[in-house]
Image 1 (cartoon, rainbow, N blue to C red):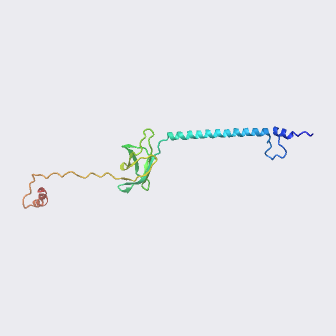
Image 2 (cartoon, helix red, strand yellow):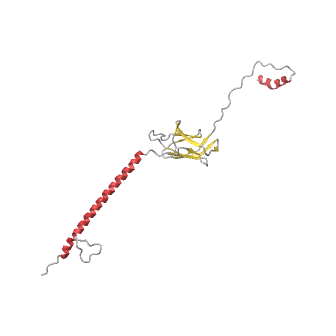
Image 3 (cartoon, rainbow, N blue to C red):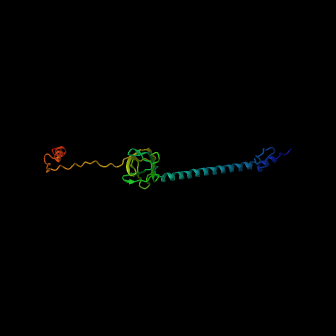
Length: 203
């Protein structure tokens, strides 16, 4: 009786490729298959651990700025006039309850088209201005309009300032003297007196 050839089995256990094995698949023995499976599992575990670590890191990096950042500033823009006339080169400032507020940019200048652009940030320490706060706008120191602050808002607000007008003269004229003696009759002075002064004295 012929003995069975054990060479193929020994070759499989030892990782020796059999004849006719395609190129690139040389170590398809039993031992090699187990080793390859273990290596694949280790690689998958490393990938999963790396993915979880990356997600946790991104979550931390995303959460920190959100907690630290103040609300977005409120932006304003519009046309500017003084006494109804364009006023390029003028300066726009903002106040809250009489207190000047910082703006972005620091110095707001009306452009050649008589428009202004600015943003008012919220103070991280005081929380002012708060939502709905009324801001007062000034052009070259003259009051020009008001607008409300909203976080992340973008508002169109035209500013119209007027120069100071002298107050009307409300002072009553002094009363006429009561001891006026008219000039003698027949004189030119008397004619003027009768024509211009006497009617005034008689009311």
